[in-house]
Amino acid sequence: MLDREQLTGPWAGLPIAWTEDDEFDEATYRTDVARCCQAGVPGVYTCGTTGEFYALELEEFRAVTDATIEECRSAGTPVMIGCTSTFTRGAIRRARYAAERGADAIQLALPFWMEVPDAEVVPFFEQVSAAVPGMPITIYETLRSKKAISLEMHRRIHEAVPAVIGVKANAGTVGRTPEGCAAISELCNVFVSESAWTELGPHGAIGSCSALVYQNPRIILQAFDLLRQQRWEELRVWTDRFDRLVAEGLKPVIDAGCTDSAIDRLLGRSAGFLHTSLRCRGPYPAATPELLEGFREWLRANMPEFLEL
Image (cartoon, rainbow, N blue to C red; front, side, top):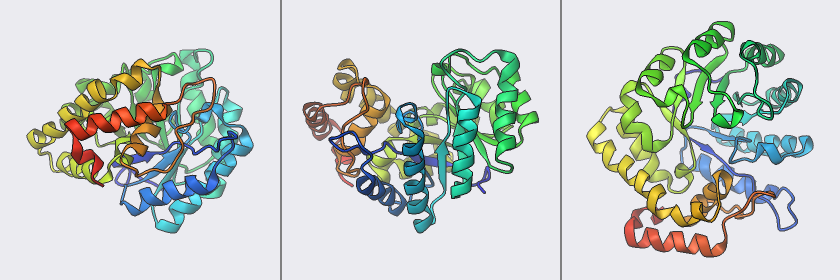
């Protein structure tokens, strides 16, 4: 089972490959998982937002889980499966399947259709954890769950559910502040976007659930080495570039209405590292081939090293 010492670095948060008929393209997906493992990423996970957990039938979740775990096991790479659902039983059903198949950890966001009352937050994590005894858990904290978990609530979760070993802190959550990151890091590991590594690395941030790592593994793994060595000024050169890549390079993609999985697919395809399609499951928009080529042109003009695998 995964522990805090192993839960570091840029974990590849993979999108699921779909066929033109909107079915799971297992062969292509397995290729993408294997390529990430071969590139030396610290871990692979899917069925987060990029992995479109919200658009998966249970049997599809099982097929994706099987493919991910089998490829990672073959390569000796740790694997985490997102088990978020709109209700506790749904999360438990997914968590049990991931545990039975051999996942090293699961990831959970709070159920998101209706806001979970404060009094139910800790019991939710307790109930899922009790269903998979000993399974390490990371919390996917996102305002899409309609609730920001307070620092005090994080402490209560940690006390009640020792299996929680990490938090993925997204924009607007307490872990994305220096004070909050430092406080949560005393309890468990904190993952933030790569562009925040210079700001939050000194306060304990120790990795990311990453799309940039499968845009160009070499660059992101080198940047993580700088974080691990606390070489902050050298790292800032890269985090500034990551910020610019999003603010400038991806602006046309974002302006076109693309989010999360659509953007991450485009990143993975830009240098040819991933083979997944650009397709997202409807009604959510996907990036077009024209947007992909426009982003490649921007990289050629501004950051050609990102195209050099």
